[in-house]
Amino acid sequence: MTARFDRGAWATPGVQTLRPGVHRIPLPLPGDGLRAVNVYVLENPADDGGIVMIDGGWAIPEARKALEQGLAAIGRDLGDVGHILVTHIHRDHYTHAVELRRLLGSRVYLGMGERPGLEMLHRLRSDVPASSLATLRRAGAGDLADRIGAMDHGGYDPAVWQAPDRWLGAEAVRFGDIGLQVVPTPGHTRGHVVYLDEARGLLFSGDHVLPHITPSIGFELAESGGRPLADYLDSLRLMTRYADARLLPAHGPVADSAHARVTELLAHHDDRLDKSLSALGEETLDAHAVARRLGWTRRQVRFGELSAFNQMLAINETAAHLDVLVLQGRAGVASVAGVNRYTRVR
Image 1 (tube, rainbow, N blue to C red):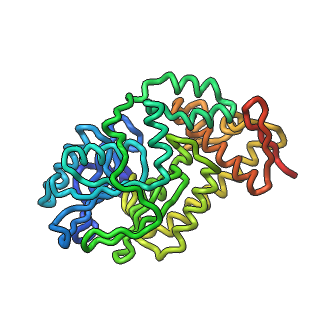
Image 2: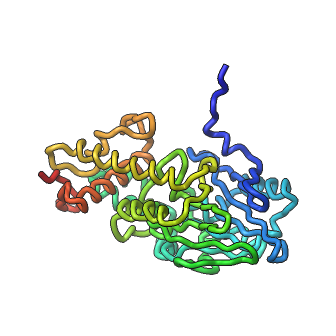
Image 3: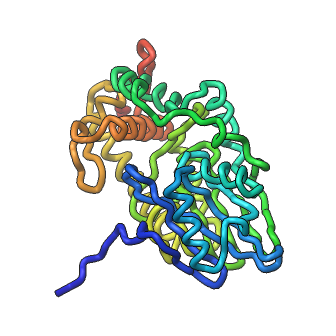
């Protein structure tokens, strides 16, 4: 009898040593379909034996316990964590890093493109995804935006949304023997960055390149400031300008080739652009209407079967694809009463 492959095995608590001094520790995300977020621990003998972490996890007790247990398994503890490099500002990556800084004095680093989102969060004093709701309204889904805006989003805690110690641009950073290239990769968020260890052939890809799923596009705290899917596709192509590296994602198992997965993601979006144009047909439609005509997830479920939150992601992703079709000259767009309506170009 052939054993079944468990695609969720990567989220099982524990430690995976990827090479000497480089470890993957999945931290739980209770109630989240992603199940866990990978943080990576880089041991640093040349820097007083300290640790560099890639991503911090979500500031919840379950994550703290899993991190403590993972560090103990490699003979370490929380006090060894000196630097935490975060790929982007979503709560499952950033908030635990800020909490660890408060407890340990660790330094936190974040891409400078996330600064507008963090500032907007402090102005609103709410974690309601305001910019995503604005995109929904432009997509003709005002009723859904109202419903999502009225939901309990977990509450705003300013203690875990403080600014990093250092904002990062496209630059090289070094901590003792550990050298990393910071590569801005806007798309998933406008300030997303990946960390490339060129010497060891490792790409800490955050949510930019994921092995089993396609990341949501433009899920922002602040306005995206452009065309998030066009930015994302450019950021994917940017990865191929570097030598191929082992893919160390934030969600999912480690993979041997970042380039191979980038090729798959680019092909997926080419196919999705074609399907979006086909769903638009010969009519003039908003993104909400087009999204209702498309299948979703690997199982191609109907739009109406999605939860409200996933309907929001589906509509906003459809809007992003339609906007790229406009940039390609394959569709036109006009705003009518604040709603973008698209027409196929012949």
